[in-house]
Length: 93
Image (cartoon, rainbow, N blue to C red; front, side):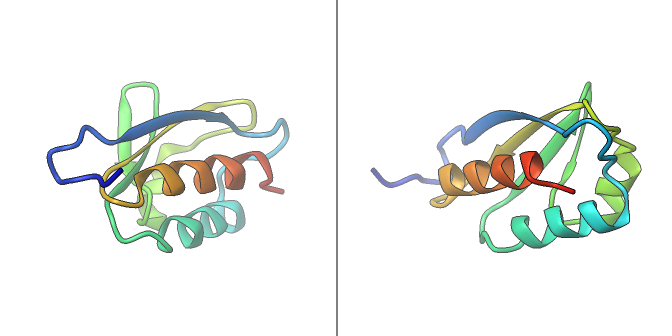
């Protein structure tokens, strides 16, 4: 199945491990994972959603351990992007 720009995208939820805040090192790892994908990727907390490829935007979310993140991607690689980012989140240290 091929995704087009008209597709709604793919969404998933992932919870930051307890004791892991989305600060500099974990956020940088997350951004590196997001940048592997060509299409747009977002991460959200509550009613805020930011570009998952922007380190400053990720840091501005201020997500703490135990926070549920909403992951969203569009484009041909959307499913793979959301899966990879969810895996990244649960494995952050």
